[in-house]
Length: 605
Image (cartoon, rainbow, N blue to C red):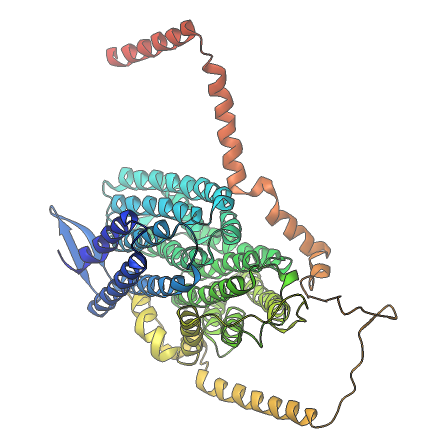
């Protein structure tokens, strides 16, 4: 068995073993999960350095490693290790530990298999298995997570069925299920339909609209470590990987399919961030931002030019980093405060400085503030959209405005989060919590540092290291300096540091002089000490404005929710089957005779 085989099989076997370990063996399941995740991460590093590998079984290349899949594997392995390390502290004392660590390992193995698959049937097998482990991991949140798990199964399972149909259509059109066959032009109705089916499966896994509604419910009820591992990190990697694989390798997209991706990306950015603005639960707010960020990735891939696709793939990695960090910060707050309700939180910065620092860095990164990683990838996506303008037309302006406006609203949303959770007035009834332990603090700090490193050293590490090699195989790559419009992260960082130092000096100089403080007044009346202005309703007036209210209503409309559509579609057939299954024997005999008659007619033709 080669490294590819070990990478897939070891987590699957370890997950099965952890599932049957008796509860009497304290710490064994955690130890196995941590060791296996570390070993598989090491294997992904070795495979990434190797860069190219094919594994053939019975004369067919079943698994294949190339520049695109190798860096996706690397990040899946990294997040697997980070999230399991975080889980050691976060999940301590919680129920369903045996199931939790078992399904985490099974998810790792299946994710590796899905990325390495060179055959669509093999990809489909691992993809479907990932849906099951996702359902099981959500269920570890307890009885209150049952509804979210079922909704996830309806949406993800339903789009998995579409993926089955897409694979069948590819086989009908080409006679092969290989992912390395010549590109299929989307010039016929059948090929267009097949691509749309693949895109739906990718959108559901990544969380793009209209297949997004499972993510907020999962974030609210599932363990935070599960949300950070799957909807925030690994599922984003898998969904955008599938979209990039079919868009760049399997199909040759025409203008109509490109337009479809651009529309989905732009709408997802704006609609999801508008819904995030008015949330009162921290995890639910973060989940809508997770949806919104998928829009940037889809928009980047939809440009189908080198800088746009590279920006989309880079943003996929960046999002997994800072969104994972934000959810881990949310989990730390929940661990210490017992709630993620913004109206009940406040003043945590002085008590949880590591969590506060990590959250600030990640919040600035997701908002696209230089010199952090989110700015670099968004800047590249902007460049890719502008590149579309060189092909003629003015529609590209709409995509650019949507992307930039979405980034502004994201920053506004996280101003609300940072003020309400960390800087606002703390309720007097709450004591002073302690900072989380090392197993929870280290993962947050590592991810926060990566946000800085991948922004300041964007050229040297991520672009040259794995983004450029992955894109250059399918698209002509321009001179490296043009990728960021000659953006100089080092110089920008220097100016930002100088600005911060000057601002700090001004702030400290202002404190040397005594300032008068007074009570807070509302309508001329002094507020009681028990009254707190939490900031959770910062942007209600914005969401009530006519244009934004319509977007918010459209995005939240149940009729547009895919799980609601699936439920109504299912009940339509259920009512029909109930009418047929009357429980009367002669009726059943009549149906049997009718079926036999149809079979006889078919055989006699």
